[in-house]
Amino acid sequence: MQRPKQIFTLISFLFGFSSCSVIDDTLLTEEVSDFSRGVVVLSSIIKAEFTLAEEVNTLGFTDNLQFQLELGGSADTNLTPLFSAKDISARQSLLAALDGYVETLNSVASGKSLSTLYDEFIGTAGNLKSLDPGDFNLAHSLSFLDSNQLVNDVSLVDELFILPKRDQRLYPVVEKGSALIKKTAILLYFDMGSKADQSSKCSYTFPKNDLKAPMSTLRLCKGGLRSLVANAVSFDTTVWKDKLTYLSGKSAENSNARKVAIQRLVAIQKIGRSLDRLLSETQRALIAMVAAHDTIHDTLVAAEKSKSASLIGALKTILFREKLRSLLETATAVKASLSKLLDSATVAQDFQHPPTDIDLSGESDDK
Image (cartoon, rainbow, N blue to C red; front, top):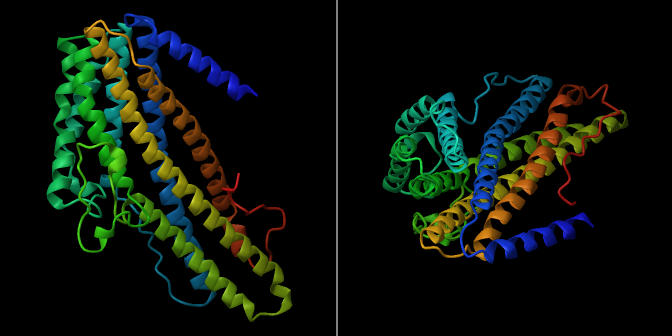
């Protein structure tokens, strides 16, 4: 019964907020602070998702290598990661820019000194300028020219990190920051991609995406992180299906081994669905992040014109926080399930002595 009470409190807060004839500085500071914390949480989740994807890739490689050796075959023993160190560095620079921006935003809103952060801002701006379109998975849904333009647009917002040093007013920072938030969110949205085509045009060309339109209108073709994860999961499930086929002709003594193989097969498929749901929810959280930042911008515009804040705008900020809570819960559950599967991978390979006390059912997405 705690949920209805929370919603009632939020609604009461909103009506009180919208009834003000001028913008309450305290409420605005709290809104900026909440937004800043939310972006940092989202950034950390995105970083973790690339790690989870690599762990799924490693799991498939390990399972396949073990099976090939059991069959007496010759298998490739070199693990190929999904992303190079340069690829990961580019994404970390992008996320560091987001974190740096909201830290700036929060400091300006609360009246804190920016002197200790200035050197970090300069480093972040430099990293943005070194972004390369080739480091991101965009070719599945954007033309070469559009991909280059999007990355170039993000890399040119370095002035944002110099601006607060000259003008420590919130409005100019938010005004300039809108471009970083929107372009970065779009770049990450495309980079995460889709595990299936979302447009009939995907079979022969790129969907016509207007990058200035609302992000909810974007249509992606199969590719990006979601597609890579789906392929890695499919590879590992194929390995376990092949193992079941191999065991089907064996004696009844191998019934426990078959049970283990079935458990592993089910577990990796369930984790695959949960991880894709996490990535899909992350894309929706990026959309909510842009909407929440627009709310802060609109609130400041209203303050400039001595108007009241928008109730709908405040709801967007709350929706962003709610999506992050859900996202964090999903990310935690997926990480726990995958860790359990990775920890039990070695003993699961031993068909002659299968584990009897390990639950390999994986993360359930039927809750």
